[in-house]
Image (cartoon, rainbow, N blue to C red; front, side):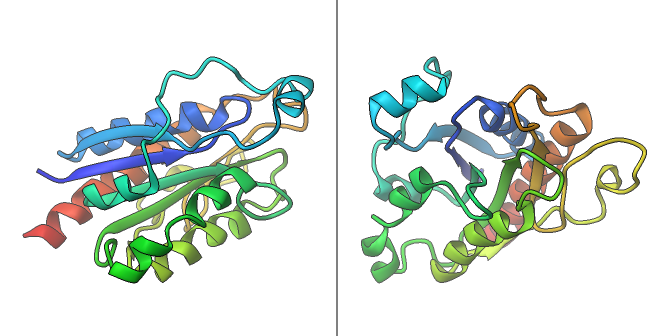
Length: 200
C-alpha cells in the first residue's frame, strides 16, 4: 500500500482544512496518509500581531529528510505575492541533500493553495510548488477536468488544472466551500491512484 505525506503551511487554518480533505481523498484512493505541517518561521511578535492560528491539529514534520519515506507528497501553502509562503520555501530550501541523492525521484507530487481573491495568484503559487517538485524528479499530478466542480461561474470557487485551491477573502473570513473541499479530495485520490500505478 502506498504511503502519502500531506505537507502544508497555514497561517489562519484554511490550508489545514484543505489538508484534511486531501487526506480523505488519499484514503479513498487506497493509500495510507500522514498530515504534517512545516515549522513557523515568523517571529512570535509578528505571529501574535497578525493573529495567526496557534492551535494546530497536525504535528510539525520531524525533518526535511522525512519526505523520502513516502511514495508521494502533496504540498499546500497560502500564496504570498503570487508565490509560496516563506515558511514553505524555508523548509524546502533545506532539501539540498534529498535533491543530491535523488531521494524523491519518481515519487508522486501535487499542490494546493489559498488566496484572498479569485485572481490573487493561485496558479503562480501552484507553479512555485510544482517547480520544486520537478527539480526533485517527482511525477506531478494536477486537478484534471475529471473534477467538473472547478468549472462554471455560478459561485465563487477555487480550483485549477494545476492543483486544488480555495479563496479565503481579504480578511480570511471565507472558509473552503464544499466544492473546494471536493476538489482537494479528488486531487488526493488521484495522487493515491497514481502512486499505486507507479509502484505496480
